[in-house]
Length: 291
Ligand code: L34
Image (cartoon, rainbow, N blue to C red; front, side, top):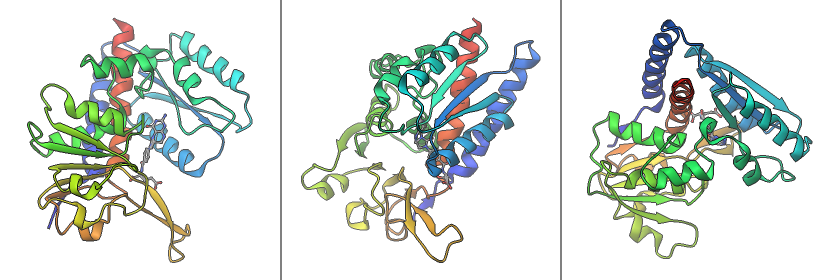
């Protein structure tokens, strides 16, 4: 039976640490770190994640505000908003929640955010810095995963990691973090077109599932004793729940927990850690802008 990696509890610990650091920062005479979250449209999942970020930031003593725009906002107007936040010396971190409506070019928006304020680590300059081993920010979801692994003393050096999924937000940055000096995993990135996927995943000491398909990873795909990290958040219909749905990950949790050595739950796994790492990045941005 796998040991549970309790992301919610670990995230509470990280948030408490950030809060203490923010208190020390403001006690030393600095203004509180300032985060602006941009939310476009009313995708219920995005709205819920953004509420989580805003609440966690305020609790940590960060000056956080969410700027909410109608789904019909023209791209040019959104770019103007970002430009204004870039120029505002009182703003340390800018986060534009994805996905954006179809008429807006996400890459253009990501490029518009000043790299110094890019607390998501989505700007190509920051992605490049990460790839060459000189990160400015750590991408929140992959960094949250590394933190979960580290806080449980799980060894990564020389071990085989398989990342399932190649998105810019999780798969690719995750692979890069696992390759960093000191982490030293041997990384394979798989995706929907990978041939004979189960043969590869069965070699994984660490398996990171970020493909966005409910219960895709079955017990047959997992090496006994492996560390299984579930990044998926899939809504599946469930008439017995008040909301009419429940959340399941990319991993068949019930079956895989019998075989894995460590496993993260959904909800209460990677999601809360993503939010905690955003707070760390916001404080880091404030510290640097003050220098
Ligand atoms: N710009 N867009 C930008 N930055 C990000 O870091 C994100 N991401 C992903 C989607 N778009 C983004 C998030 O914030 C996914 N994501 C995210 C953040 C938090 C949670 C899930 C996804 C989370 O807190 N999940 C809870 C359950 C929440 C619920 O009930 O819906 C959990 O326990 O997993």
